[in-house]
Length: 411
Image 1 (cartoon, helix red, strand yellow):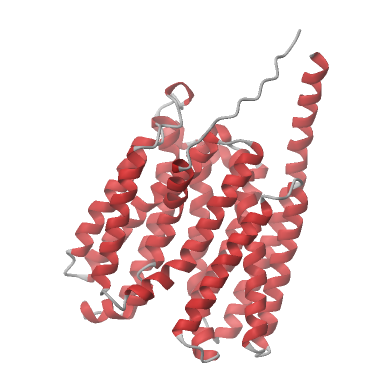
Image 2: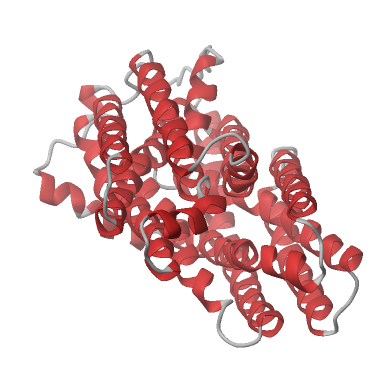
């Protein structure tokens, strides 16, 4: 018996990765873009800072729940239609938000905004899994990881710049315009999950895939690894403005420049990960690197070191976090290719749950101490689960090689 070994190279227009990359960043961008105008919103609605801050929490809840609910549905009904529906939901909720007369109604619309933005995140990853395999998937996930890592850092910087020319409603109008542009671009995307490949079971059984993917050790350890990586990252995001501006006395402009440099370093980390041929070596380096970086950050904060040393430690963390983000994305989704929607849902939601938990923790007690302890806890757990991925990953690699050798022998 002979097996014909044929490799087909699929040409994909640059429009596709650009659109998917923008969709993957849309949710985090929606969450953080308006942060600089939150005090203005409190004054506009004559309400407390806590109620305005709740709008951030509501959007993160929407992003997490949206991915859980939308992901499995795309395995049954396809990607494109649900993507278009989620963007329409975002547009409608944003229009209603702009008409808000009450902070409670605004917060409700933020929940729906997050839900609509979640579609872009989960479906972009599912479509990428449909289109790419192997090293190509790793490279594309490195691109998505770079964009996803930059978005929550760059969004408040851009929002801060825009406050010089507009108010809080203007910022949300910009988000509305971006949502409309993405909806128009998404119309030109082709469906990537053909009808014959879709899950034919009833909807409730499709949702059971959420539990099925949790039986996969590679997927679970990959998800937990990046979940605690994002826990550490959001602890940094939540505390860095107070530390850099208030503790070290730097201006908001300098802080924005620092965020911009961090975003660049995350992108570098993602690009570096795509160069590794040995995934386990990259994982080891990233896991150890994240841990070493948070130890240096904690030491710099607790001993009141200068801003230069602290920034170097932050940048080291961003580099290894970027590497980890790209490789865990590709590993997790490649290990659950048949349930890409459900896998993308859980993987994406885990990060936003981590962020929702980490953000308030850094505000408990003295800021330098609480930030140090939160980042240390996240860094340690991130390293533990990163190393836990390696045995399962080696086992899968060994099985693939054995199957390949068997096929070659038959040929």
